[in-house]
Image 1 (tube, rainbow, N blue to C red):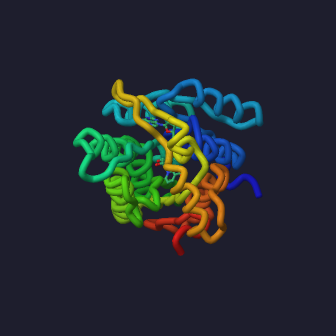
Image 2 (spheres, rainbow, N blue to C red):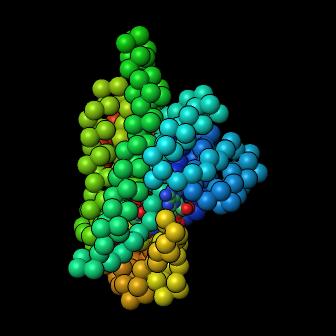
Amino acid sequence: MAGLLENQVAVITGAGRGIGAAAAKLFAEHGASVVVSDRDAEPAEAVVAEIKDAGGQATSVTGDVTDAAFAEKLIKAAVDTYGKLHILVNNAGYTWDGVIHKMTDQQWQAMLDIHCTAAFRMIRAASPYMRDVAKADKNAGKEPEPRCIVNISSTSGTHGNAGQINYSTAKMGVIGMTKTVAKEWGQFGIRCNAVVFGYIETRLTRPKEEGGKIAVGGQEIALGVPSDMLGFIPMVTALKRPGKPEEAAAGVLLMAAPIASYITGHVLEVTGGFGV
Ligand SMILES: NC(=O)c1ccc[n+]([C@@H]2O[C@H](COP(=O)([O-])OP(=O)(O)OC[C@H]3O[C@@H](n4cnc5c(N)ncnc54)[C@H](O)[C@@H]3O)[C@@H](O)[C@H]2O)c1
């Protein structure tokens, strides 16, 4: 199967690594022109080079989604480059774990900032090119082009997770945001869905003991999941294994593709059957 996104323009945040990078490559394989955005220029440019080498279309825009001015810059760059915007994937994210009684206000706020505020700003920045254009088409009696938003959430949001009160709260917020956009923009034919991941093998889920880190605001934040927990997750997962970024990206494609034209406000679980 190929060509599910012919003539579509997609913006994907956090697309330099992991699930976002896999989604960018898959979208391009299916015919989309992809704006690969990440705070780290080097991996984003490598993804673009890979897409172009394979004959696809892509460009990179570097920036931090928690910077208040970045959303408008990114969306404008996408429209300046490709003329339109059909798909927005709010994927950029990280974890900053801690138990409730030791969690700082900064730690709490950082998760709301990246997973909720940044995604909201992206959607608001996209509205002139998605909502307003779709509304004008509707008023002119034209058939709407396919347009949609996919927000990335987590089983930590839908089920809660010890050590992640900040991340869980933010990722559940993403679902409320998704359903609200679906209800507000559905009248213009714009769909909005969330994709929830369980345990997907990326930098975010490497064994914590390996000491993976992300630098945020001059601070080094530990990434990863404790090894004993990583060993336990497959036991409560129907498929008995973690997912690959490419499998996660396939879930994003399922929601983004116009074949899902009557699916909106949905929360798709791409978890290998975690906790079913
Ligand atoms: N891996 C999993 O098991 C899993 C499970 C549930 C949800 N998720 C979610 O999936 C999304 C992607 O995560 P991943 O596992 O691919 O992680 P990853 O670390 O491999 O990739 C995330 C990318 O986002 C970028 N990023 C981080 N902060 C940013 C910022 N402020 N501005 C712009 N870019 C930024 C990083 O540079 C990185 O390239 C995240 O929202 C994450 O919360 C992942």
